Image (tube, rainbow, N blue to C red; front, side, top):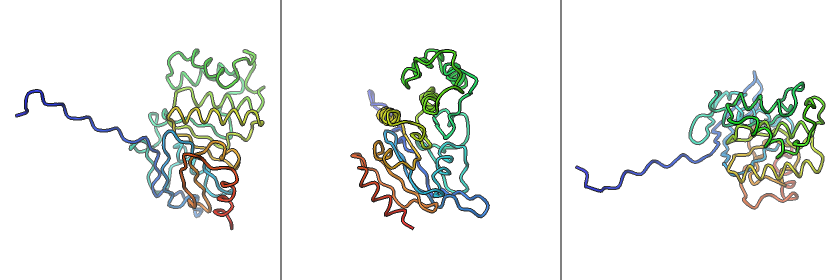
Length: 250
Protein backbone atom coordinates (compact mmCIF):
# COMPACT_ATOMS: atom_id res chain seq x y z
CA UNK A 1 0.00 0.00 0.00
CA UNK A 2 1.50 3.29 -1.04
CA UNK A 3 1.96 6.02 1.54
CA UNK A 4 -0.17 9.15 1.36
CA UNK A 5 1.54 11.96 -0.48
CA UNK A 6 4.22 9.75 -2.01
CA UNK A 7 6.03 11.44 -4.87
CA UNK A 8 5.12 10.14 -8.33
CA UNK A 9 7.65 7.94 -10.06
CA UNK A 10 10.11 9.93 -12.14
CA UNK A 11 9.58 9.81 -15.88
CA UNK A 12 12.30 7.96 -17.77
CA UNK A 13 15.03 10.23 -19.09
CA UNK A 14 14.84 10.88 -22.85
CA UNK A 15 17.38 9.08 -24.98
CA UNK A 16 20.43 11.20 -25.82
CA UNK A 17 20.07 12.81 -29.23
CA UNK A 18 22.87 10.90 -30.90
CA UNK A 19 23.21 9.66 -34.46
CA UNK A 20 24.97 6.32 -34.14
CA UNK A 21 26.47 4.03 -36.76
CA UNK A 22 27.59 0.66 -35.41
CA UNK A 23 29.64 -1.72 -37.55
CA UNK A 24 28.06 -0.34 -40.71
CA UNK A 25 29.12 -1.88 -44.00
CA UNK A 26 28.01 -1.37 -47.58
CA UNK A 27 28.80 -3.68 -50.49
CA UNK A 28 28.03 -3.15 -54.16
CA UNK A 29 28.66 -6.49 -55.82
CA UNK A 30 32.30 -7.24 -54.98
CA UNK A 31 33.10 -3.63 -54.08
CA UNK A 32 33.15 -2.83 -50.38
CA UNK A 33 32.21 0.85 -50.14
CA UNK A 34 32.18 0.90 -46.31
CA UNK A 35 33.73 -1.54 -43.85
CA UNK A 36 32.79 -1.76 -40.15
CA UNK A 37 32.12 1.96 -39.69
CA UNK A 38 31.27 2.88 -36.10
CA UNK A 39 30.90 6.58 -35.27
CA UNK A 40 28.67 8.68 -33.03
CA UNK A 41 27.48 12.09 -34.23
CA UNK A 42 25.96 14.36 -31.60
CA UNK A 43 23.25 16.99 -31.76
CA UNK A 44 24.66 20.47 -31.25
CA UNK A 45 27.78 19.56 -33.20
CA UNK A 46 29.12 20.03 -36.74
CA UNK A 47 30.77 16.87 -38.07
CA UNK A 48 32.93 17.03 -41.20
CA UNK A 49 33.47 13.74 -43.04
CA UNK A 50 36.71 13.87 -44.99
CA UNK A 51 38.65 11.49 -47.19
CA UNK A 52 40.05 11.00 -50.70
CA UNK A 53 37.89 10.07 -53.67
CA UNK A 54 36.46 6.58 -53.29
CA UNK A 55 36.92 6.51 -49.51
CA UNK A 56 33.20 6.01 -48.88
CA UNK A 57 32.10 9.53 -47.92
CA UNK A 58 29.15 9.77 -50.30
CA UNK A 59 27.98 6.27 -49.40
CA UNK A 60 28.10 7.16 -45.71
CA UNK A 61 26.07 10.31 -46.29
CA UNK A 62 23.59 8.32 -48.36
CA UNK A 63 23.10 5.90 -45.47
CA UNK A 64 22.57 8.75 -43.01
CA UNK A 65 19.94 10.24 -45.34
CA UNK A 66 18.21 6.79 -45.59
CA UNK A 67 18.56 6.98 -49.39
CA UNK A 68 21.07 4.09 -49.20
CA UNK A 69 20.47 1.02 -47.07
CA UNK A 70 23.52 -0.50 -45.33
CA UNK A 71 24.49 -4.09 -46.10
CA UNK A 72 25.35 -4.68 -42.45
CA UNK A 73 25.35 -2.92 -39.11
CA UNK A 74 22.84 -0.53 -37.55
CA UNK A 75 22.08 3.19 -37.69
CA UNK A 76 20.00 4.94 -35.03
CA UNK A 77 18.88 8.42 -33.99
CA UNK A 78 18.02 9.16 -30.36
CA UNK A 79 17.91 5.44 -29.68
CA UNK A 80 15.52 4.61 -32.54
CA UNK A 81 16.47 2.80 -35.78
CA UNK A 82 17.11 5.21 -38.64
CA UNK A 83 15.24 3.46 -41.42
CA UNK A 84 13.50 4.61 -44.57
CA UNK A 85 10.07 6.07 -43.83
CA UNK A 86 8.07 9.27 -43.61
CA UNK A 87 8.61 9.84 -39.89
CA UNK A 88 12.38 9.51 -40.14
CA UNK A 89 12.58 11.56 -43.33
CA UNK A 90 10.75 14.35 -41.47
CA UNK A 91 13.71 14.55 -39.07
CA UNK A 92 16.25 14.99 -41.90
CA UNK A 93 17.16 17.97 -44.04
CA UNK A 94 19.44 17.14 -46.98
CA UNK A 95 21.40 19.33 -49.40
CA UNK A 96 23.16 17.32 -52.10
CA UNK A 97 25.18 18.11 -55.22
CA UNK A 98 21.94 18.98 -56.99
CA UNK A 99 19.78 21.65 -55.33
CA UNK A 100 16.65 19.51 -55.50
CA UNK A 101 14.29 22.29 -56.60
CA UNK A 102 12.01 22.73 -59.61
CA UNK A 103 13.56 24.98 -62.24
CA UNK A 104 10.29 26.24 -63.70
CA UNK A 105 8.98 27.42 -60.32
CA UNK A 106 10.00 30.59 -58.53
CA UNK A 107 11.86 30.48 -55.22
CA UNK A 108 8.66 31.08 -53.25
CA UNK A 109 6.69 28.55 -55.27
CA UNK A 110 9.37 25.94 -54.61
CA UNK A 111 9.37 26.54 -50.87
CA UNK A 112 5.59 26.62 -50.61
CA UNK A 113 5.41 23.34 -52.52
CA UNK A 114 7.91 21.58 -50.26
CA UNK A 115 6.33 23.11 -47.15
CA UNK A 116 3.04 21.56 -48.21
CA UNK A 117 4.68 18.17 -48.71
CA UNK A 118 6.07 18.34 -45.18
CA UNK A 119 2.80 19.55 -43.69
CA UNK A 120 4.34 22.83 -42.54
CA UNK A 121 1.80 25.24 -41.09
CA UNK A 122 1.67 28.77 -42.55
CA UNK A 123 3.68 27.68 -45.58
CA UNK A 124 3.70 31.11 -47.25
CA UNK A 125 4.99 32.86 -44.12
CA UNK A 126 7.61 30.20 -43.50
CA UNK A 127 8.80 30.42 -47.11
CA UNK A 128 9.20 34.20 -46.91
CA UNK A 129 11.06 33.93 -43.59
CA UNK A 130 13.57 31.48 -45.00
CA UNK A 131 14.09 33.36 -48.27
CA UNK A 132 14.99 36.44 -46.24
CA UNK A 133 17.29 34.42 -44.02
CA UNK A 134 19.26 32.89 -46.93
CA UNK A 135 19.59 36.20 -48.76
CA UNK A 136 17.00 35.61 -51.49
CA UNK A 137 14.25 37.83 -50.13
CA UNK A 138 14.85 40.52 -52.75
CA UNK A 139 14.95 38.20 -55.76
CA UNK A 140 12.43 39.16 -58.45
CA UNK A 141 9.18 37.41 -57.47
CA UNK A 142 8.53 36.02 -60.95
CA UNK A 143 12.08 34.74 -61.59
CA UNK A 144 12.17 30.99 -62.26
CA UNK A 145 14.76 29.01 -60.31
CA UNK A 146 16.39 27.87 -63.58
CA UNK A 147 17.60 31.47 -64.07
CA UNK A 148 19.46 31.46 -60.73
CA UNK A 149 23.22 31.25 -60.37
CA UNK A 150 24.65 28.11 -58.80
CA UNK A 151 25.24 29.99 -55.57
CA UNK A 152 21.64 31.22 -55.48
CA UNK A 153 20.42 27.66 -56.03
CA UNK A 154 22.58 26.50 -53.12
CA UNK A 155 20.96 29.12 -50.90
CA UNK A 156 17.51 28.02 -52.05
CA UNK A 157 18.45 24.40 -51.37
CA UNK A 158 19.38 25.31 -47.79
CA UNK A 159 16.05 27.08 -47.33
CA UNK A 160 14.28 23.98 -48.66
CA UNK A 161 16.18 21.75 -46.23
CA UNK A 162 15.27 23.95 -43.26
CA UNK A 163 11.56 24.32 -44.03
CA UNK A 164 10.35 21.60 -41.67
CA UNK A 165 12.85 22.36 -38.86
CA UNK A 166 14.69 19.02 -39.10
CA UNK A 167 16.78 17.61 -36.28
CA UNK A 168 19.51 16.32 -38.61
CA UNK A 169 21.07 18.40 -41.42
CA UNK A 170 23.17 16.65 -44.06
CA UNK A 171 25.30 18.45 -46.66
CA UNK A 172 27.30 17.14 -49.63
CA UNK A 173 30.07 19.62 -50.58
CA UNK A 174 27.96 22.59 -49.43
CA UNK A 175 30.51 25.31 -50.28
CA UNK A 176 31.43 24.00 -53.74
CA UNK A 177 29.19 26.46 -55.64
CA UNK A 178 29.76 29.48 -53.40
CA UNK A 179 32.08 32.45 -53.76
CA UNK A 180 34.17 33.50 -50.72
CA UNK A 181 31.38 35.72 -49.38
CA UNK A 182 28.88 32.89 -49.84
CA UNK A 183 31.21 30.42 -48.13
CA UNK A 184 31.55 32.75 -45.14
CA UNK A 185 27.76 33.09 -45.03
CA UNK A 186 27.41 29.29 -45.05
CA UNK A 187 29.79 28.93 -42.10
CA UNK A 188 27.57 31.33 -40.15
CA UNK A 189 24.47 29.32 -41.08
CA UNK A 190 26.03 26.00 -40.10
CA UNK A 191 27.07 27.40 -36.74
CA UNK A 192 23.57 28.77 -36.24
CA UNK A 193 22.06 25.34 -36.84
CA UNK A 194 24.60 23.69 -34.54
CA UNK A 195 23.79 26.20 -31.79
CA UNK A 196 20.08 25.47 -32.31
CA UNK A 197 20.83 21.89 -31.25
CA UNK A 198 20.79 20.13 -34.61
CA UNK A 199 23.16 17.39 -35.68
CA UNK A 200 24.98 18.92 -38.67
CA UNK A 201 26.99 16.63 -40.96
CA UNK A 202 28.92 17.70 -44.05
CA UNK A 203 30.94 15.75 -46.57
CA UNK A 204 33.65 17.90 -48.12
CA UNK A 205 37.02 17.89 -49.85
CA UNK A 206 37.63 21.46 -48.64
CA UNK A 207 39.84 21.32 -45.56
CA UNK A 208 39.59 25.09 -45.08
CA UNK A 209 35.79 24.85 -44.99
CA UNK A 210 35.96 21.95 -42.53
CA UNK A 211 38.41 23.77 -40.27
CA UNK A 212 36.20 26.88 -40.28
CA UNK A 213 33.16 25.16 -38.82
CA UNK A 214 33.67 21.57 -37.64
CA UNK A 215 34.16 20.53 -34.03
CA UNK A 216 34.06 16.83 -34.98
CA UNK A 217 36.23 15.34 -37.72
CA UNK A 218 35.82 11.87 -39.24
CA UNK A 219 38.35 10.79 -41.87
CA UNK A 220 37.72 7.80 -44.14
CA UNK A 221 40.34 5.92 -46.11
CA UNK A 222 39.68 2.82 -48.22
CA UNK A 223 36.16 2.45 -46.78
CA UNK A 224 37.25 2.52 -43.13
CA UNK A 225 37.35 5.18 -40.42
CA UNK A 226 40.99 6.12 -39.80
CA UNK A 227 40.38 9.18 -37.61
CA UNK A 228 37.47 10.19 -35.36
CA UNK A 229 37.82 13.02 -32.87
CA UNK A 230 35.58 15.62 -31.27
CA UNK A 231 37.19 18.86 -30.07
CA UNK A 232 34.91 21.65 -28.79
CA UNK A 233 37.65 24.17 -29.58
CA UNK A 234 37.73 23.04 -33.22
CA UNK A 235 40.56 22.12 -35.57
CA UNK A 236 42.91 24.86 -36.81
CA UNK A 237 43.50 24.62 -40.54
CA UNK A 238 47.18 23.66 -40.35
CA UNK A 239 46.49 20.99 -37.72
CA UNK A 240 43.73 19.55 -39.86
CA UNK A 241 45.94 19.48 -42.96
CA UNK A 242 48.64 17.57 -41.09
CA UNK A 243 46.10 15.13 -39.66
CA UNK A 244 44.56 14.57 -43.07
CA UNK A 245 47.88 14.00 -44.83
CA UNK A 246 49.04 11.61 -42.11
CA UNK A 247 45.82 9.53 -42.08
CA UNK A 248 45.29 9.35 -45.86
CA UNK A 249 48.88 8.80 -46.93
CA UNK A 250 49.09 5.86 -49.35
